[in-house]
Image 1 (cartoon, rainbow, N blue to C red):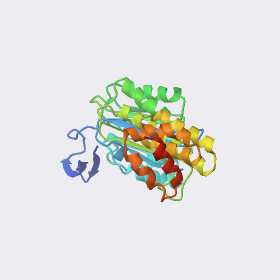
Image 2 (image 1 turned 90 degrees about the horizontal axis):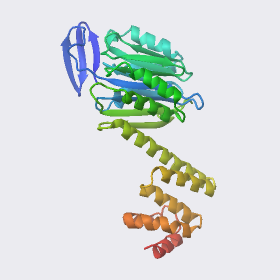
Image 3 (image 1 turned 120 degrees about the vertical axis):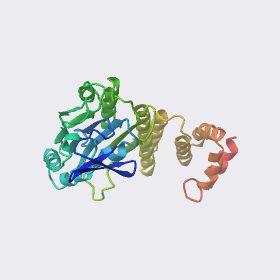
Image 4 (image 1 turned 60 degrees about the vertical axis):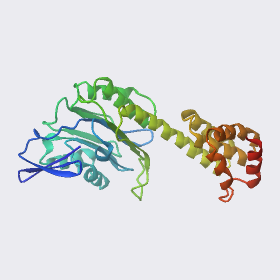
Length: 331
């Protein structure tokens, strides 16, 4: 994607790490960038999210912006990255998303080729599509969400995204994923596909800005980025179950821990690490007989896990006696 900024009749374009200058105010000589995205809030949890797909490398590094308890921004088309951090700063200062977007658009000389959406933690949302964004381009602002697209195959994209988001059940990631997939189902980007991203933050404001990030996934370059993004969403959910299982162990809830580990393995059945820590947890619960089949599968597929197991003793993660028994019983 590119930065397009008019300064005293000169447009400076950031492209692939190099600065390119072009005379004039129009974007006719610029490389077009196509994107469809969604910003949304989950009313049940207060979570805030932004997701995007584009025929452009590493789209998430420029388009998606979020801060827990503050808001989310999608800045695209001939993207001016400043809308992301500047929009979040205004919303953090108490400016509602529509006013924040209005202020930034008003001060942007390249507004005609911008497309931006902003959503604050209270659910206020606004979007802007410049008159010179490459067609098909447009947006729809709904209740607690906005969908927007430019350089699409047809003007069916953002209406289909709206319908998919409103009619899909599940968590915020699932609903945003459905919106992206709906865009692709009616043609999406006229030039094809390349990268995708999803960023979800908590609705609770955090003292440290790096906290409160619940999901941050990027597919930088892939022939089918949405399928890969969906796979990563499922992997992320699996690891959330693993984390919940570890927490249950800490609280002495062994049965709860095993349920969480089992749920993780259902989502990611080929992951040996998940099986390994599940087996270790069983051993620590004095349920060695139940751990043997897991360890057997793990060791046969990758002997490095057998080498690793005794090393856990010094870290206090398993008792030496249990390790000796496992290595004796499991061939």
